[in-house]
Picture (cartoon, rainbow, N blue to C red):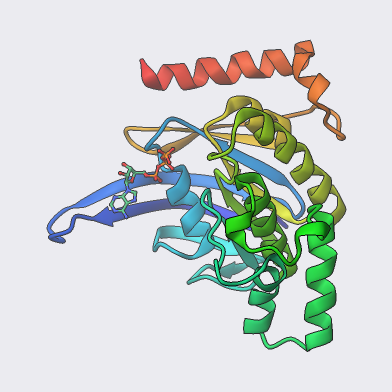
Length: 254
Ligand SMILES: Nc1ncnc2c1ncn2[C@@H]1O[C@H](COP(=O)(O)OP(=O)(O)OP(=O)(O)O)[C@@H](O)[C@H]1O
């Protein structure tokens, strides 16, 4: 059974005066298997973040949206979300930030400490555990964010352009790191991006969205072998996928 079922889901926003509504996503259908890595691409404003927010339980929707068969009615500990801007607590150290969610869940202190240490090591920030967010680079802050999300042990990791604010080279490194972590943890991952190469590189399937109205246009399976390598991005199969996706996105801009 798919872990996440999206059936005929539409999402609307009300205008500030509540007199009109705007349909940001119309009639979306998608089924996601446990442990799958799905990326969502599409032009600006097509509803990528909106669809992710609905899965996170942050916006209401029409239609059917279930996780493990249960309707999504709000946020829950089965899902963790990582946004573009690392929303870290500036007065807490790296360790303190990674601990935070577990402290809220009132887990035992020893468990919290060990789990935080485990994930800080996994994202390669052992030497920075006592640093504050203001002392870290953007890439390091996003590593903390990912560690914090994983420490809460969600079943589904939702990521909204998590590397969007990083330079191209750091972004590429972070993509490789994220795959290494995902391969170790095998959480279901849904990742929104503008970047076609990033979308292909990470994914088992790429969801292509279009706009006017915001909708799912197609879902493309990425049959490139795991483990993915940076060199793979120069191979004909990768370049073919890139051409195909670029043509799809260009249709929308025309
Ligand atoms: N809180 C909101 N209230 C009203 N309209 C909204 C709200 N959030 C998003 N929208 C509108 O819904 C549409 C989809 O927005 P969304 O942010 O989901 O798109 P996106 O594909 O993620 O865009 P981008 O790639 O630029 O981040 C846009 O037209 C946007 O203006």
